[in-house]
Length: 195
Image 1 (cartoon, rainbow, N blue to C red):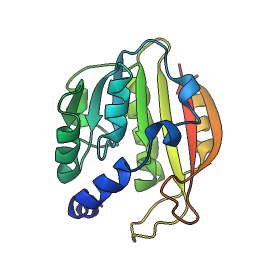
Image 2: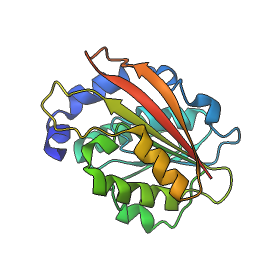
Image 3: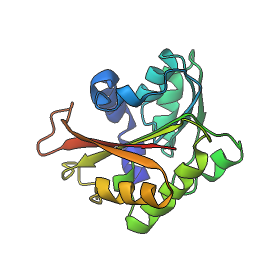
Image 4: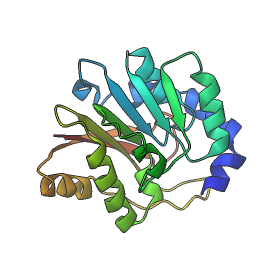
């Protein structure tokens, strides 16, 4: 999977940058904490969302496993309060060394890359990174096949809701949004988890 993102980094960067994050994330914005603090963007890709959060006053740690995309994202955000780490779910081992907790965690279009057990491990990791009070974890789920031949796993919002219940966390599912890149059969859904 990383080979695809590294080999196509420039084209993907331009594609991701072509859409407005306020539209992409419209269905969960009401849950964004009103006082910006430390945010984590997991699977940062082009850095679009990390930059967007930084422009809203957040200090952002951007995590991206594809080195070529990470470099483009780092260049994009070089004058913003964004720090980049080459790391990946399910464990985020390098990030864990920072021993930080986050008021906002954004995981956009990432979980479909993992089979069920690794998704559960990822959710465990992410829940452990939430700050103890009033923090928000936002997971956006892509539904629909991939026209570029990547193998995606179908992820239901219910599995995240069930995980949250077991951890005594609040979870809310937001209705599907159309794909801003107009890919046929692709929709997006957000799950908001709060402690």
